[in-house]
Length: 138
Length: 386
Image 1 (cartoon, chains in turn cyan, green):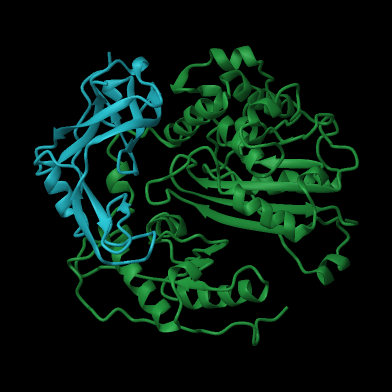
Image 2 (cartoon, rainbow over the protein chains, first blue to last red; image 1 turned 90 degrees about the horizontal axis):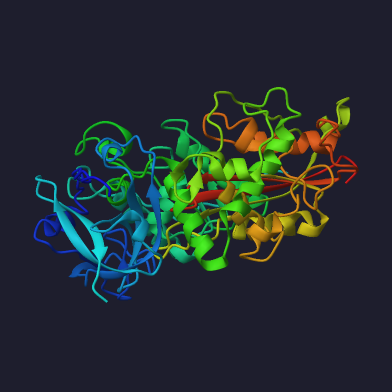
């Protein structure tokens, strides 16, 4: 069983302040293009698909599947190196984007590509929370 | 070749604001890009070359990713305040050479509104969302690629190990190799797990060092008493996260490779020797597929039966021992790839690994991470009589 993962706080920019503030409220936001409607990831005030600057926030479902993952056995990252082994993964949200994250609340060896997961939040204590994913009841 | 009359400046844009506390630096890059392209009557879709300084995150990789650009020519020459003048010159050269047709140059910064440092105190735009999850160096990202490649194509750890074994067989002949001893598949599979499925022996060495190249004109080359290698073709690309729809099972070589082959007028079947960037064993598997040496997904099977082992394998690779065993100076192994390819074309590789009648060689470089965003560059070289 892996240890408790750390909760390093992000450093928001003017472009991401609302995203991180929402995580503290238990909400995972996606920036969405007002012109072509494409969900944008990572969050930015610009649509890399159609070039529009007209974008706005919408709340994601928080549901997805594991696209790929790795069980990290060696790490020098402060906080994480005390929690080995842990899982780094890309989760594909229902809305399309693939997010880098951790898989938690299960044994690392039980993680599989295609596994259904749901978002869970870990408060950083600094006005934000980290979005991680846990196995979802099928 | 001259750039005189070969290129023009079609659009310009100066950001109207002088204090910008409400934007990230990346946003400012995007705004000036849109402004200059609008001035020219072009769109981001028209851009095939991108130029920025080194403060724009991870060179052009970060901003191509942010902007969604698909470029076949990039340049982040850093000469301080003169950088953008240099970029204009380089853009003209590239256009004159037929490498690209629409070159975008951007610059941005926020010294009044953000703390001093890289990007005006800001991280690259992706790091805010990707730097929080315990990525333990490059290996974590490449492991993400390996897991998915295994899932989609049935690639195995033993197949990855064959890449390391071939490199080690070559390294035993290189007295300067950091790891000069041959290893077996079993030894690779028994090495400690670092970031599953990648083990220690799937990873390149970490070494100090460096290298250099001298490129000369044909006129100069003729005057030299030294065998030269002809540059026959080149391709480059940034392959990024595609607005979060990234596919980690391929690399930017899917773009850079065909462009290099087309320019050189040759095909993968014509190549006698390859230097393939080998930061990790999976890097080699994906790159061989993407360059067309085998079908997509067949890389793991392609490397079996000593296919990569010089001098008699089907596709001898990295005869210096590569990054996996010989050298990966400053975590940037591209120059060593070109150096060994030139040795092969000159017939100056170690006799035990010299490819007979080596007339065409390919050197391929990889930068960044195949697990997120990366640069790819393919170079095809020919023997002097090629």
